[in-house]
Length: 318
Length: 249
Ligand SMILES: Nc1ncnc2c1ncn2[C@@H]1O[C@H](COP(=O)(O)OP(=O)(O)OP(=O)(O)O)[C@@H](O)[C@H]1O
Ligand SMILES: [Mg+2]
Image 1 (cartoon, rainbow over the protein chains, first blue to last red):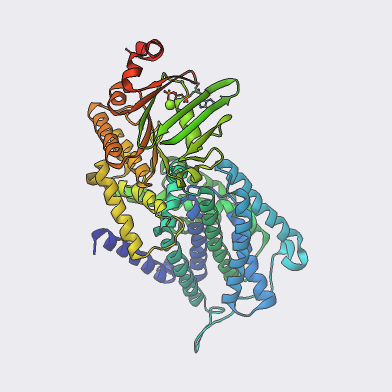
Image 2: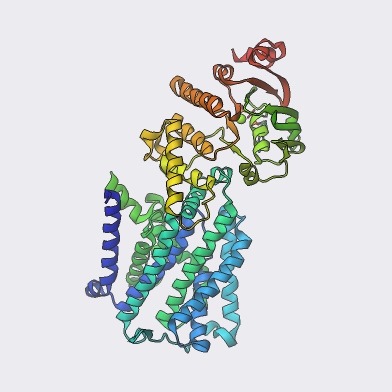
């Protein structure tokens, strides 16, 4: 095997060992399974968002819209339609993906700040719908009265409902599928075309690449995976509320990706871990902890524009 | 046989007429140079041919077909490729990946989420051929953004060639290059012209390159076509000498 390929495999092995054992090694430093699930789910959302920022070169500020739709889709399905957690997640994914396809078609021609501005509006639209449509969504109080259900595999019934570690493992299985699909996508000719658009849109256009179509497809794929994370998030909390759609949520996703390193595939996952831990730690010390997060974020952007993994990589290659 | 025909092409930016009523016919297999002082409208002329700008008036035909209304992509699909005055490459990707992207687009794979073994082998072969032709084999795994200016230009030209175009538009391919690099790029263009009978239109300021490569030369000045002819005719043209060659000395 080529050294580069062996290195990649080794890195992947380390990442998965760390993820699989997280509930155990994090316990002494105040971690618990539900917190680990939260990190991995938010990290999944940030990785999905990063399909656009890191690998297509496009800043979306409205990914909360699709995260929230995934959450509400799964929650509503569990509440009214199905007792299968997996079907509920599929419902959330479908809802988020369809919305992503429709709204994505509206913005693919916008670039830069304009793209970011229009996408902010997406989140706010759904925020108000969820807020106002009391009878269906529970409005301001959020969507309650549903719970994730045990998952059956053949003769086995995994009680992810009551066993938090089992639920965490379930989240990891979904992450494996999502990360695998995203990895394949990025290794494919399609993924390389996205890199071409990120690197130099004009050059890409004059190679005959259908730039808008590619951006739209990347947007839809990104929404699909973000919605999947959102659906898991609803299952984690057995609850969804309108703040999931808020621009705060979109901002959190962006911060995680940039913090961890948006040029690295797993960077956003690291960013999510750092963010959640910081949030936990800082919020116990001060009330306006977002202040501190904002400062740290600014420092990272100014001094380490490639995020934490970007710095580690430069060290490794220097 | 005329391959590229341009009729009364015009581009106006506000009150500035950057290209004014220019007509031109380029034969299949010809190497045509466009020269003219700064701001003459050469790049604007290219931008209209390649579909970057809509002309204010006029017609463009490629191989007998009108293309004035076609998108950039449509023109690429009909065999047009171009490079830019300011190098446009994919800087944070290696030489090989730059060429891979072009080869995959050329082979119609750019929307594929996966490719088979045969298609992958064809792409690899195309990449190797492009690199060999442009003298980039040794730099295959270097990031393009880290290469010398001349090599970046070579990558850009190789990327355009990977599309297997029938018409190649080069905007000042030797701009900002030293002696050695200029010579290398000129030799590459000559090989393409001679061995592949590629139709080439190039904008160039270096007169040695122009007189070495071009079958015919068109001179633009203040948006107008000032003169057209063989290198010898252009060198002897008093109007050209006055407008351009004179003040270049
Ligand atoms: N997008 C644009 N908007 C407005 N004016 C433009 C635009 N592009 C070019 N121009 C103007 O049109 C004129 C012709 O410019 P162009 O770039 O075509 O010249 P050129 O012959 O390529 O010059 P150079 O040798 O410096 O590259 C210039 O006066 C330029 O300022
Ligand atoms: Mg120019």
